[in-house]
Length: 510
Image (cartoon, one colour):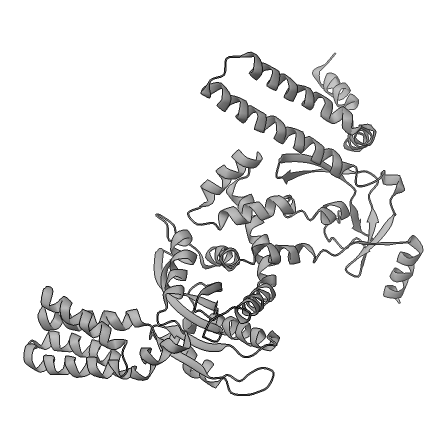
């Protein structure tokens, strides 16, 4: 018999996709959960019995726990797969037509498989598909996958875990993939990880504003019920940090931005902070818009006495412009009354200028250190910045001769002179207002440096913003609330009758 005849006979005896799908579906429907878990439980018992029979050693204990973890995860994976496959009834018992987002869909005759990933590993999910009734070419609809909330094949629990891991401090893609493999038996590649992370980031960012507003209102309520001699304080800050961004032919370093809104109680203790972060942008308009919206909605939602408002930053161009053009002109969103902001130029940036002048006057040494420390103490007293400037001006005439040193000295001198009205630290202290922008400076480290500026990292703006969106949710303490809101956005597929669908099509045709 010729080879071609043999091949035809083999192909003729192979089951078709439809018959294979039907057989697998029927097998799933008839399998009992006890039948699924029985052999797995037996393996667990054998593993325990084997461990108890052997001599107890650290090596044996380590192997036992590792093997036990694998077996328990396999048991959970099998139970998860069986459970999800039972959620849809037999195909014949499902509606022939459904409606979703103003479109009609018609049911396929057989369930089809999909590889899905859970916190216990990969499963094989059999689900019913619905194709567009008008054959428009739109994607096939799978109600079960939508109901489970699959994100590029990942369950919500696994997607949440993956997004948390990749945005955590010190992590990168390789480490995240390794953790997912070790902890959850998920063998993803970089492409799948990026797809899931980007989808979660977009969805959670849509919920960030509302959850951060709710968080700040909760902190204000806590501050108002605290005890102490000060009014509760709502402190705002923003700062910039250089970030390497990939471009054609290499990388460029531009200024990214971080914003913070902090609540302090009546004793001046920090209760909590929410964060904003954006990749480099000319003028930082996105940051200004988001920060302003956050402040306005918090003030609008707060029903108690108005907290003390302060803006604590260095004297950078973007930071100063935001105060001059936005905060100083801001009115209360409910009453329309003009808001009074206490503008504070960071004490530590002012101290840096004092140390600069000291080294230019005396050089490095004990005399320079003594004068700088004395000026730092003066700076905190009433009229302190005036006293510092008078002392510096007098010493300048005595000790500075070189033109280059005079120029550098004058630059530091002007920094203090031009911002005197924002350095009244002795007046700020009785109000419980922070004198330094340490919270915002630390935010640059925790938001950017600990995650985006590790050794060898290079970013595109879209990828960096994806991580920043997740990271600020982590640090703000609103991750769980934001993800819960994402899960509650699920839109259920509506089941419709064939008559109703026909009527819909007739109206469209008319």
